[in-house]
Image (cartoon, rainbow, N blue to C red; front, side, top):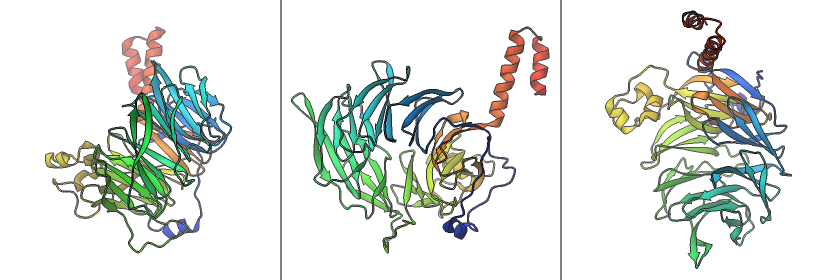
Length: 442
């Protein structure tokens, strides 16, 4: 099943002459087979990896589904009365559990082995936006208009509500039981402290300066650095120790408010504790967070906003998904053997991506523009997220309510051949030599 779609929005028409097009036969694109799952009935917003072969998806149809990338659906978790907005996988007493937060103001705990709802938590008074695990203290934290701290049994430990009624959207866990929380344009640092035998949340610092527009992304780069990014396009690099801003990337000094936010940052992808890919409007860029230098700039990678990024196939491709309904694969279209000096500066993940454009220990003098190596197109609407499943392929979800598994055709063909060979040997239909001949013929 394949569905093809292209939006005719005015901004797409304006950019159509500068957006790269892919070769018709796409010889470097490994994803030549797809499997389409139609079990959700409304927009699928998120996909979360459970392990090497399983993932969970959440939808506006109020359900969460557990999938096996080979077998398909395992369980459908039904219980929320409003869309699921966040998910968290964890292990408790040797049991794999999934916590889901919803705009119905509840958190539900699901057993991934049985599919049953083990617990429902109702202490929140508004939509729940994020869930995190704080492993150093064996606690959980959730955010809505209040910040809640939970013990391992999901009993409330402490609740704190800022003075203003603003929705908190992101929580980033730092070392030493510290949390950075975003709300609108503001970042706040919290500390988990132990008073007697009771944990409490304490405000340590309201980070300044604020972003000019609402914060869209908050990610850790390394133990010493994290980044935040906002609708105006600004990316701030922060020291986790001093909590001061050390770099400002992609900032427009002459920025003017615009209802369409033409420079919005939708996604941040940390790379090897020094670099960050940013999905900015219809394109993406790669920055060195220490020097502030832009190493890659592809401003018109898609016809609509880029929604997610991932390095896949051991760094051979950068994959980007978009509201235009496609996943695009970027990289170097030349066969290469990076020099020792190059791989010492950029580890294997980025040396594959830069190819022969990386010839020394110094980053490129001009921003590199990667080649478009392939395109995956089967969704009939915006792609909201995708997940790298290693050599098994990719899983994407979108506004068309579909989950699509993109598979390496050569790998799948080899697996089918092996199954046929094993079946023939098991049934005694042929001897080893004959089966090998059949295998080679396939």
